[in-house]
Amino acid sequence: MDFAVCYDHSAFDLAWSIFLDVTAFLALMTPLAIARLIEISREDAAARLQFA
Image (cartoon, rainbow, N blue to C red; front, side, top):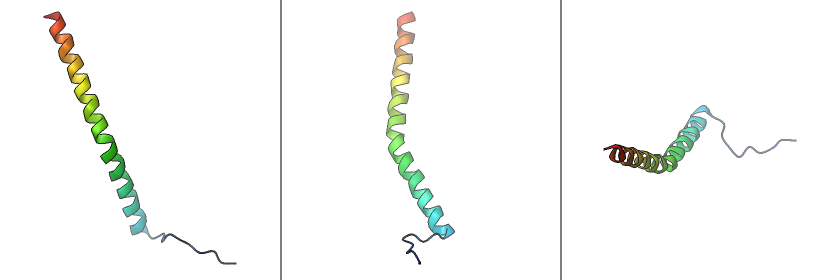
């Protein structure tokens, strides 16, 4: 019995799918990373002000 394949398993389609997945992941993680960097820089600035 033959089973229907719903996805074309060509290398180009696979590469495009991986590229879109990675791009979506980076698009979601970038704002979180920027927020964390801002938080770290504020903590560092506050620590420098306390010693002055």
